[in-house]
Image 1 (tube, rainbow, N blue to C red):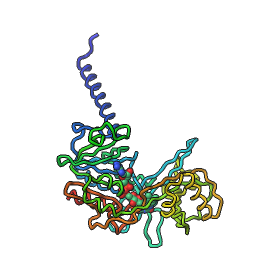
Image 2 (cartoon, helix red, strand yellow):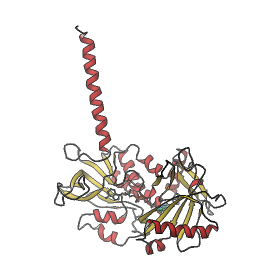
Image 3 (cartoon, protein in one colour):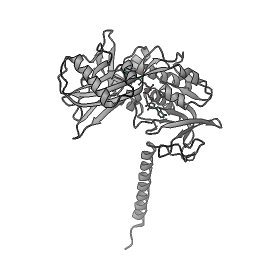
Image 4 (cartoon, rainbow, N blue to C red):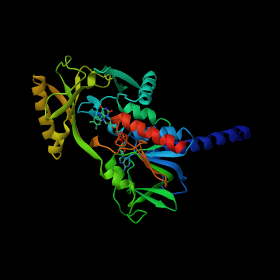
Length: 380
Ligand SMILES: Cc1cc2nc3c(=O)[nH]c(=O)nc-3n(C[C@H](O)[C@H](O)[C@H](O)COP(=O)(O)OP(=O)(O)OC[C@H]3O[C@@H](n4cnc5c(N)ncnc54)[C@H](O)[C@@H]3O)c2cc1C
């Protein structure tokens, strides 16, 4: 039986475009996990940003909004860096979620305070508590990692992609990574690594030690980075059956072991159908001195020591249902680099940003300002 030639044409037309659409979607998905290597697949970027913490994503979103071709490369599976959150799923499907790094965000500078107000009115962050200097402490809703996820919304981000070295060849930055097995062998350069991307400009938005490792030999920034000091810190997330409603939002016990106790479950928007229903969740930070002396302790030893100290401080036996510990090798900056601009930038298009480059400010504010200031410089 002969079909209508018009109908056949449209049938073939739709099938062809449907197949093309599927192919395109698959490509998009894989490109967020690992970059398509090879110059013919990826044109030279205007900017490559290494690190998807608050500094990197602040700079990236501002630069990308002006139409520059930009990609972000992040070694972890998602955004956040030290502003990330942890979701721990236990046997039986129960889950606990807490902020693994940064506890809350405050603004000292006018520009960052305005930014906080803008994120607040957009529903990205919410006020948590007010300190005795009338400063509002904000948290992102419904996890602190939501803030960097928000900043990354329109960006090309490549997760699980560790940049292992940088080389400048013919005036273009070449970013390399390990091969598929995570080893440096059988690759494309003399170190056995695989070419990841080429870019006219590179922004290193990693903690200072990791930026140091990526800087090419002879870079004038190496000397400055050698002076930076960053403390390590053990952090514990704890789920309890105890009623601790009398405990302040955040407390700093007089203890050599514990630096702070934060009530995660009383942060705005932290209880939902899936997480933390009805239980008390605490984030407990060990002091930097105690961490330094117990850097190589096992997770079980750290859990035991922090729980004993907590029990003593709260003066009641703890009914613990779940516990999780994490060691931050690079937690808070104890000595940064004093820069007038808040970033480092050289004539070859290599820049450094992060919380260690704005010594007048701390933590998230310092990192955000740094990203913002470099973006203004390179786009002006
Ligand atoms: C336990 C803890 C509590 C804190 N509490 C507060 C607080 O209450 N208030 C506050 O303001 N600040 C706090 N801070 C500090 C704050 O979190 C940081 O200052 C801020 O998040 C730093 O942002 P950043 O973008 O500079 O760096 P990061 O967040 O460290 O981001 C760097 C990113 O680079 C990635 N990266 C590194 N090397 C590579 C590589 N080779 N290739 C690809 N990616 C790479 C990392 O995975 C990371 O995601 C706290 C930090 C910690 C750890």
